[in-house]
Amino acid sequence: MSWQEQIEQELAKAATGLREGNDGLARVCARRAVALGAQAWGKRGNRKAWPADAMNQLRKIQEEEAFPLEMREAAQRLLTKVTQRDQAPVSTDPIADARLILTHLDQLT
Image (cartoon, rainbow, N blue to C red; front, side):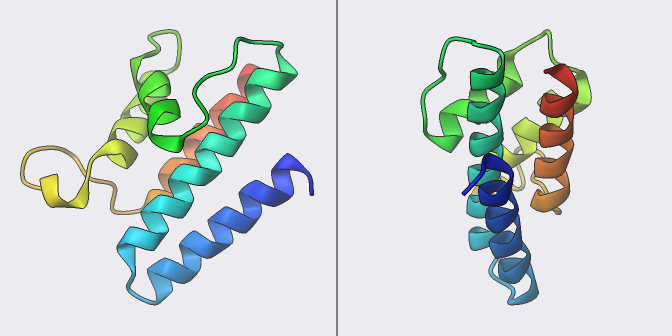
């Protein structure tokens, strides 16, 4: 299965989670889609591999000042735990945030 197929599969699971009211599943799948995209981006550009887990990859994206601000903000929203809603921005549409990051990664290749 190609990277893109794996990414779309995770985003489809995220959409199912949202439809079923399972925000946690939607966020986890959106994070995994971004991690897959970041891994593919790294391999396409022969970049040093980032840690494989989604949370660490999102942290790398959020911290990378060379990335556009909107991409880093989307990563921050996906990183924020739902239990921290009162303290930090939480993504209300994790799929849109994931797609925003994935689009930027595709454009940076």
